[in-house]
Image (tube, rainbow, N blue to C red; front, side):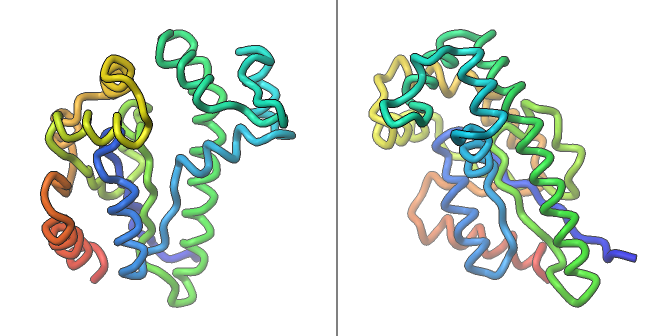
Length: 205
């Protein structure tokens, strides 16, 4: 019989600091998995997801060397709600299947004195309705203006395009209301680290 493993989801908004929090939890020793990394694999050349995306959006989304141009694809799906939903229908089932299999493997390891929890970074957790599948949910949040500035800086998007991508997600205020734990990344790294450590103290014991 496999041991009961605490399934933890880490979510938030685009550019609110989820990846930083995930890295710090991993440094504390938590097994982690990143839905964005899995999504990239789903769309890799030679996969069913790749074939489905090209069939849906056309060869114009491909780079000269044959991989999907994510910037081009992003411009398409964030400008068309139907296109975004079609892409999510291709990507999300495969991503959640991979996360489920990962947690199952962790539970088998836990039976042999392995980890007692795992943390999955899932940006669209609430939007996809999968939050009830987890025992605890952590939300990484920051001030709206800071979120916009971070996204524009890291992605080199115009303010209009950055706002469109933020607005395509559930408002961060709604996510914080639903969360078990909130990590506010608006301040200095030291303050964010303090909050991460406090959450880990509760979850990792």
